Amino acid sequence: MQPPAAPLSLTREAAALRAGRPPLAEHADRLCARIERVDPLLHAFVPEPGRHHRLAGEARALAARYPRPEDRPALYGVAVGVKDIVRVDGLATHAGSALPPGVLGGPQAELVGRLRAAGALVAGKTVTAEFAMNAPGPTRNPHRPAHTPGGSSSGSAAAVAAGLVPLAVGTQTVGSVIRPAAYCGVVGFRPTYGRIPFDGVIPNAPSLDTAGFFTADVAGAALAAAVLCDDWRPEDGGAGDDGPCVLGVPAGPYLDQAGPVAAEAFAAQLETLAAAGLTLRRVDLVPDFDEVARHLRTVTRYEAAQAHADWFARFGGLYRHETAAAIRHGQEIDPDDYLAALRARAHFAARVAEVAAREGVGLWLAPAATGPAPLGLESTGDAVMSVPWSYAGLPAVSLPAGPGTEGLPLGLQCVGAAGADERLLALAARLERLLAAAAR
Image (cartoon, rainbow, N blue to C red; front, side, top):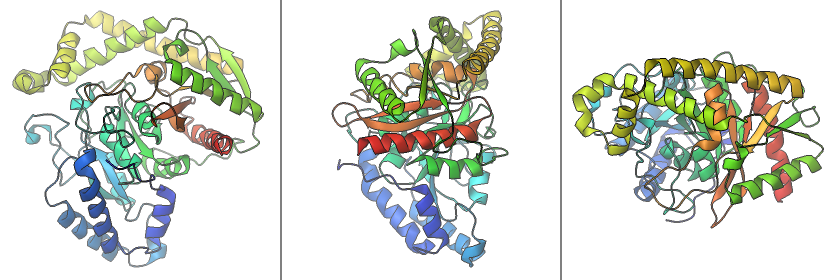
C-alpha cells in the first residue's frame, strides 16, 4: 500500500462543492475512482456493487435540487462514510456480522437524515468490528497496513485518514472513535452522550453508546457538529487564542495505563502547551480507576446481552467467538450488580464535574491511546484511555499529535464538560494550532 494521501479538509471540500468546483457529476466520478483504486488494499468500505451508479444518480438529483450556489446547504455534495451499524436507506446493514441483513434492517438513522438534509452524499458503509464490539473487520491502517486502524469504527477512521472521504460517522461505547482517530492520525470527536440522536443505530450498550465522527481537523469537526448535534451553538465565550483555560492532567493510576511511547509524547505535549502560556494542573482524578473500569465493563456486557437477546437466541451460531463470549458474559451478570454500576456511574460523573469546578479545569488532557497502533489485525487495540470519560458520558476529541514509532501516529485526547461540546471544540482548535506551530 502506498503512503496515505493527505486527509481531505471538510471545510475546503464543502466550500468548493457549494461553488460548483467540481460539478457534482465529476465529483462523484472522482470519488468512486478513489475508492476503487485504494480500497481493495485498505478495506475501509463494505463492498457495494453498483456504488458508482448509485452515487451518480444521487449527485444528479442533488444538483437538480440546488441549481444556485447561494441556495446550497452546508454539506452539499460532501462524501460521507457511515459506519455499518448505522442504518441508511438504500444500503443494507450488516454490522460486520454474518447475520442475514434483513434481520438488522429498520428506518434510516436520524443522524443520516441530518447529513442528507445538509446535502451530503453517502459514499458507502464503512467497516466495523462485529456489532461494534471486539471482533475486528478487515480494515488496515493507512500508515502501516500490517497494523490495526483501531476499532470498532475502523473503516471510518481509515477512510478519512486515506483521503477517501472528508467526513465519516463512527460510534463510541468505550473508545471506538477516540482510539482509531489516534491510530490513524485524524481528528475524532465523540460528543456528550446523547447529543447526536442514536435512533436507527444497532445498539451495543445503550447507556454508553454515542455517535461521533472523523475529520481531518477541528474546523471540519465543528462544521459536522453543527449539522449533527442537537442545538449546536458556535462557541464565542473566551476560548480563542488568548482566552483563559486551565488544562487538567489526571495524574495517578489512570495515566499509568499509557505505554512508554504515549507517555513520553504526552509529557512533551504538556511542555509545549505550558511554554505557550497555558496553565497545567495535575489532579488525582481517578484514584479508583480499577473500580471505574470494572463498573464500565459490567454495564457494557450486561447491556450488550440485553440488546442482542433476540438476535443471539436465533442466530448465536453465526456470531464470532469474541462477540459471543462478551454476550455470554453479560448473560451471567447479576441485575443488581448492573444497577449498582449505573449508580456508581452517576456518582463518578458528578465527582468529575465537582473536581473540575473546584480546580478550575476547563479541559482534561490525556493520551488518546496507550501508544501507536499495534502490529496485527487480530485486535483493535486497548480502549483503556477512554474508560473514565466514556463512563461519565463526557465529550472528547482526539487530536493528531505527531509520530510515535515506525511512522505511526499518536493522538492527544481533550475532554470537556458534559454539554459543553462547543467550548471543547473551540479549545481543541487552540491546542491544535499550538501543537502544529511547535512541530514546524
